[in-house]
Length: 221
Image (cartoon, rainbow, N blue to C red; front, side, top):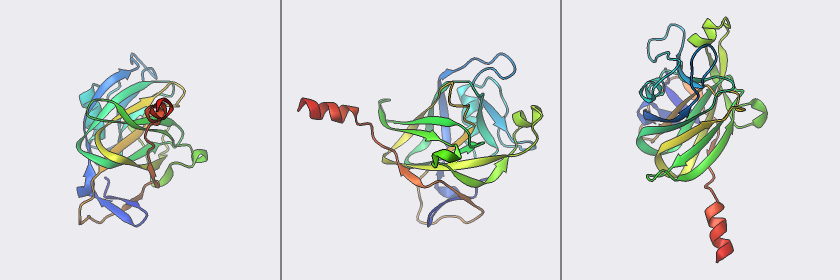
């Protein structure tokens, strides 16, 4: 279970975390058997918080993400594609991502109240990309275990800070993104934070606001 997130000298405790409240599936490759499909709900071996579902509904994906169990994740098949609109209980500027395996990509878009993209970040958890940091722990979920791979996999972490608050992100995985297996939470710092086992989050990055409209306006002006 997550106790706190540490970014530099700043600590985010349990009371600071804002969990996923709902997931709307814009697209998710159809699962029929085996390693087909894209995003599914997966849970750690022996864990009791979360669920394992190969063809999940939006409600079930929200159940997988909307808790503090770091073994309760969205698992994506290597060649699967999805578009998920993820909403949080409160608007926030700080978002934390964890990716099991440190070997895939995920496009993250921040949406405003009208569904327009206000910021975008192309996350790459591979160590060579130098975006994610080793979070200091590994997990073993049911899908990996059932496939005969009984070794826990390392987890990478990344923090994103937006220039304005939102309670909605659009998460996109294309077929060449190598299937991100992830957890996401937001954070709204309180004056006092709780202590516990620290998880190192990646350096907080400023998600760049899309410049196309501004560039177009400047050209026309």
